[in-house]
Amino acid sequence: MNKHTSEPWEAIIDPCDFHQKSTLADSAGNIIAQFGGTGPHVANTARAEACVNACAGMDDPAAELTRLRSRAAEAHQWEEMAERTGLPLKPEGAEAEITRLRRVEQLAQKMLDESAQAAKENNK
Image 1 (cartoon, rainbow, N blue to C red):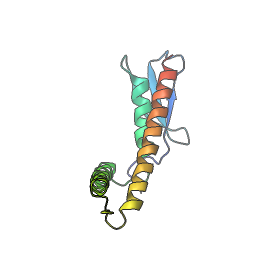
Image 2 (image 1 turned 180 degrees about the vertical axis):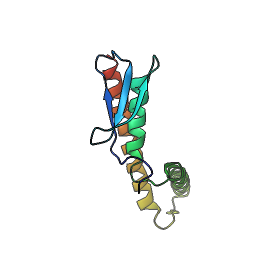
Image 3 (image 1 turned 30 degrees about the horizontal axis):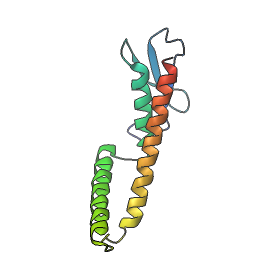
Image 4 (image 1 turned 180 degrees about the horizontal axis):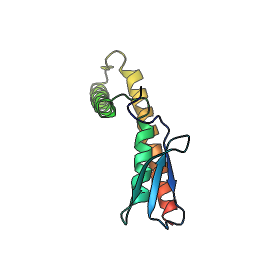
């Protein structure tokens, strides 16, 4: 049994912003959460949607992101050392891990960029 609503989540923004609220819904349209008030609710909704969908399939997103950041830092150190010495000092499997981490980073950045763009368009 899931501890939370399955992904993907979708931000539903009132184009007129008459009610000053934004909604997060599941793929069936069921309301998960609403953001409102005079603050940046559209941007908050878009960010929540991007974060949840980027973490799809992760049992413990905080732990997974910590592990990925640590592995990315380690891989970067190996790359710098290899550049300085001219030697292939990467540990076994690092090449595949570096490639995977770069793809995850690119996907996360793309989703954040799309969310920011959607928030800007909805604030117009």
